[in-house]
Length: 288
Length: 127
Image 1: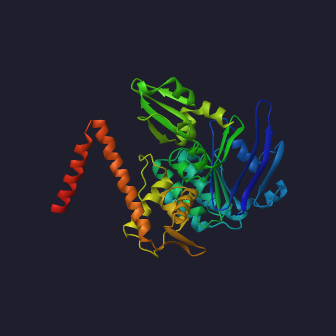
Image 2: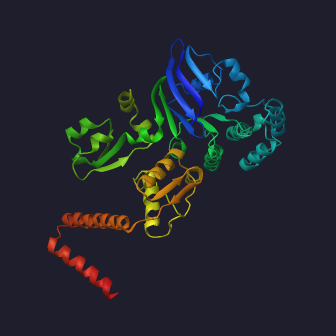
């Protein structure tokens, strides 16, 4: 299985913030989800992958190209929709179409219009007059319409309604279905979007806490729930994060720690919401 | 082949797929030789990751329920009766264990439990 992207010891040093070292890879035909709280370094990572910023150390191999110059030449192989960038304010859908056709050899105008129609974007309205969600749809349609081997999307679901979010998931899965194309999603992906990510890169405060199969991270922990009286000091000691209410408790712990618990407790698999929102700090310390 | 995933089940998604496909193979809904949807197709249909469906198919293959033919796809394997019998026994055991747990919880005597099982069996024969 060939990797479309290989990142090794990638580091970016700023005055008050250090990102990395990051090491991960994306095989052809899979989806990588990049997760972490605000300010974790997700967008900076994407900027480094796209040579919009120069790394302090480390290497990026994108579709076999290892130097910024070679990657620039192969830019058409990467589809990009970033949160911070869009199209010139006065452009309408037709202007986006003709501009993309100019510099992308594989530009598929029919596909682009198909996606624009699917998303229900108003074609006569200038880009700046579109709502944030609709702008995101134009960016997405452009990123997915030139047969790019690797599509990089920063917060693609931000500003999308549930219908468009569902459409996005289906589109991305169809995009990788042939096993030749891959997608990197940087997002506060939880719930539905997390379910389609084959691999996860979990960054907090510039540190890489986890890279691997999504299931590997989720299988590592379980959620133990029970009534108030069941929370013994021994149990508490096993926990990585605790929520107590008037009627009961839920405690996250390593899956192997939950193997020999007393009867009467409910043991559930965790999801990314639980990992990130409720038990963030403890799990971060554990993962490191 | 049908697969219906539940978010509430507390059962991992790959496990839900495995269980449901197994049931359909054992009850004959998915006969030997039937082609399963491709891993990537199933992932798209169920809105889950490719790795999750890969794991489910790999487990089903390891347990002898399906065979993967390189380049052709995944097919339901012929089932031997012994395997089917073994799965039936395991299902019965699980069901009876649940009944026993419920009995203990409710303070029902062992003898009464036996009587209940006999009554249920008789009722089935009458019907």
